[in-house]
Image 1 (cartoon, rainbow, N blue to C red):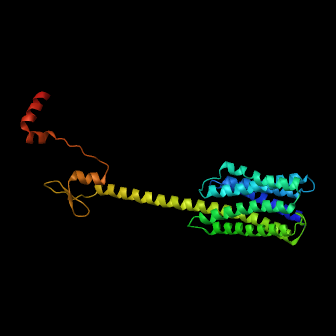
Image 2 (cartoon, one colour; image 1 turned 90 degrees about the vertical axis):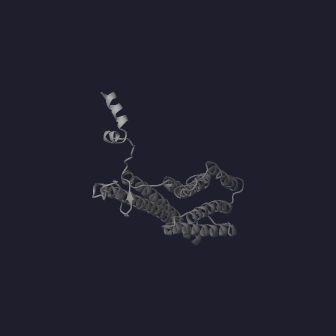
Image 3 (tube, rainbow, N blue to C red; image 1 turned 180 degrees about the vertical axis):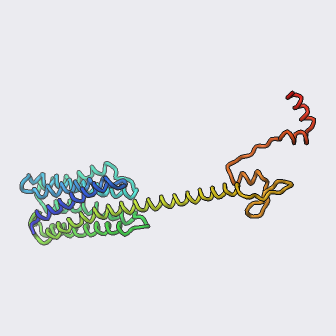
Length: 299
């Protein structure tokens, strides 16, 4: 199979996933990091495009710009994964570290043309980033539904193995060419197109599961609030029902059979608060001399 055809498949796969995620974002709740995944898809699509155009454009543009887009896309995917898992985002200086492998690519392109070493450099960067994503997914996946997270992690680990093997073979046989339709190249780019679709599907499923978990959590909170409200309403209804009250001391018997002072009972079963005073009849009965003085002052 022609390698350019496989690269076009990779372009279509990553672009399709990017567009699909954009549509998904316009209609669904998404979480931090989702935008980074979308951006990563389009960066990778452009990177594949520069590889396809190799021969029609200068080699420097294909090798440097294309691989720079690849590394940026993979870094955005790692950053998006960390944000989605509520982990610290990648510090901005991290992206400047990509200039180090870019310098190595430029050296082994202009000073000493060695495609096998360039492949080893870019493969090393991809393996580090893919392994970091797998590590984040395995270590920080939610305990309620880890299957999709583990699936995405395994896919990244498989990618690490395949990329490492390809790099080692290129170092052993340095006469390979990027667009030569060898079995290794055909297998690598074919699996790469499948992985890109798989990554996108896993990311959207992870987002779906998080939405469902938030909905379940909201439902639990709502049920708890409803239960509290029902208990409050039940207590208010108790005050409007038949209350056993002592005919002499006016104490009330509560639900457990104990007798309480009426103000204590009402305070426990409502928001009412009591402040003590004395009515005119009790004033005349208990303090007649004070009551007479108040009556005279009132007159």
